[in-house]
Every structure is written in C-alpha cells, then in structure tokens.
Amino acid sequence: MSEAGVLESGTATALSMSGPSGNLDRRADIDSKQEQITKLLAERGWEGLLLMEPANVAWFTSGATVRGLCPDWDQPAVLITPTQRWLLASNAESQRLFDEELDGLGFMLKEWQWDWRRDYMLRSLAQAKRLASDRPYLELPSVADWLAERRRCLTAYEQACSKQLAEVVVHAVEAACRNCQPRETEREVAGQVAHRLLRRGAWPLHISVSADGRSQRYRRQGFTAVPIERWCVVSATARKYGLHVSATRTVSFGPVEPRVKEAHANACKVQAALTAASWPDAIVGEVFQAARRIYGLIGAEHEWHSAPIGYVLGREPVEAVVYPDSSEAMQAGWTLLWSPSVGPAITGDTILVTPQGPVVLTSVEAWPIVLVRVSGMQIQLPGILER
Image 1: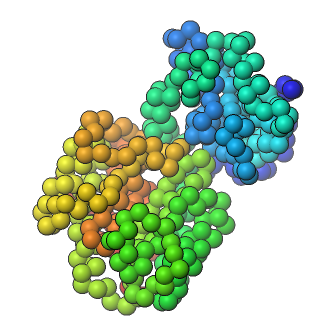
Image 2 (image 1 turned 30 degrees about the vertical axis):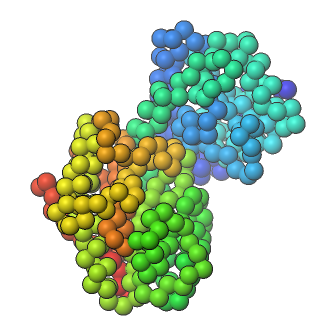
Image 3 (image 1 turned 90 degrees about the horizontal axis):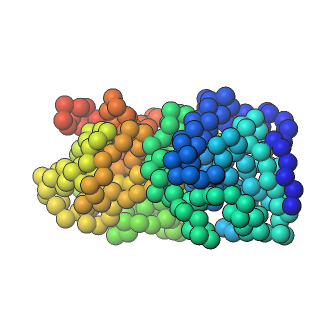
C-alpha cells in the first residue's frame, strides 16, 4: 500500500470535466465544503470524516464519479481532515480520477493495489484516527443525515452545473421527439434520447417512452418493442457533474386527440400550482395539498394516488420523495422534479428553488408552450408537439 502526494497530470482533460464555470470555481466550491466539515469535526471532537457513499463523494469533490465496473466494497472514498483532503482509491481507478476530474483541486492520494481490497486501508485509518463516517462502518459515528441535508441544497457552482445539464436533457428529449417517426418502437426512440445524452457527456440514468396511452396503465415504466402509432410521452433523467436532472415531453403524429389534449391541459394546471408554490420555507406537505385541491377542481381528485407527483433531486437521482404528510420546509438550492399525471398525460420539469422564486431549469428549447396563471405568476409549461 502506498501513499502519494497530489498527482501532477495534464490539465486539458481536467478542465473539460470541471463544469461550466471552470476549475477555479470548482476548487472554491470544494474548499467551502471542507470548511463546513472542519467546523463539524471541531464541534464533535473528531479528527476526520470518511466518505464512502458515491453520492457523498460526488458532493464533496463537486462532481467526481466512478467509471467502469466497480463493486460497492471497492469504490473510491474520500478522507477529510481539518487541513487535508485525501482520495482513497485503488490503482485501477486513481490515475483516471486525477487526470480527468481532480487535478489541481487540492487532493492527495492514498492508494491500494486493487487485489488488496479497500477494507484493509479503511480499517487502518479508523484505528489510527478518531473518525466519523457517512455509512455504518465498524463502530464509527455516522453523519449520514447531516450530509443528506447539505447535498439537497445546491451551491452556486452546482446550480450552474445543473443548468447546463438541463439544457442537455431538454435537447435530447425534444430532438428525439421532433425526429421520431410513426411505427418506430419505444425502444428506438429511447435509443435516440440516449445517443443525444451520451454524445454530450451525460449519462442516461432512466429513459421512459410510453406509446399511445400506455402511460395511464403503467405509471412507472421504461420502454418496450411496442410501436408508436399516434402519440407518446418521452421522459429522461440524466447524470452529469454528479448531478441529476429530469424532463418530460409529449409528441403527437397529427392533431392531438381531444381526450389527451384535455388531460395534458389539466396536468399542466397541477404542474403550474406545484411550480408556483416552490419557494424557500414552503412546507412540502402544504404544497402537496395545494396540488390536491387542483386535482379536485379538474375532477381528478383521486389521480394523485396513482404515482408520486414529485421528488427532490441532487447527487442522488432521488434525494427524497414528496409525500403528502411531509412537514419539511423547502430550502433555497433544492432541485425538484414535479411530474404530475392526469389520465394518460404526464408532465415533468426540474425546478430550482431560489430566494427570488422558482426557476424552471428544463424550460423548452424549441417546443409549443402552455401558459398558466396561478398565484399572480404566469408559468410557461411544455405543450404537446403536433407533427
């Protein structure tokens, strides 16, 4: 087992992986997170914090992610002390992580040979220092809840990354809808979405294509060999910079069926109410109840029982589910996926909660819009594209 200082690597690739604001802002983001952890360590009397959960590693490194096949027990980890930050990785992963993602960001390396296994290193560290951890390990105190709370509130750097990812997701979904043809299968359209995501550096975490009303029968689905005859709902959730964004669009070959048009208009009313209520300090359960009132007004009071209407996104694809009895208050920096359904219609956009009000990250690129006025706000939502 070896310990090395910061690896010196070429910076061209590192800069391309650093996010929309450049490597300098990313380092400042990491420095700020280390300051928070240093304060926590001082308060609790710990010497260091061990991060093993991939979401927490991505959060602290402001975007570093594992590539290739890597079992959970061999994943890279991070050790943070008041004055240092260490990447813990096997020799199969460490060079790429520094070359592509961590060069110039102040990390040092503790490396194990891949066949020696991570646990040997972690046990040695836990015996030598008073550590806390982000998951149950040995008898170390856990800070999982503390980290989950901070992961949800995106920093300015992370918000910039999410905005750029949102543009990629919207383009992938809308372009696939503009170019797909009648009788193509759900699988073929999903492949078009995935291709557009991958070629712009985003990983397609989940893609759903629902043909001709299958979205009403299956509220959670992927894609099948069923051909699309008249219309379909296309959704995608993608990861880039260790963050997640989701968007949904509906396309019709020819004029929209009246029942689908009405259902979509009603789903937009629920979506608008949820979006307009997405402010800091808004109680999640109260926002949910506002959506239930809209469901009642449109004659679909039981529709919300069919599937969740919203999620908190972040370093995890689902940081939290929006439940009707939640007493938690929304915080500035949350990204929310609001995705209500009404019959066969599903809407879906990623919203950023800010002190100035909700910002729709996945606003349309080249798409018909629906305007809904609610609570003194005029909300622009994706309509149905007729082709």
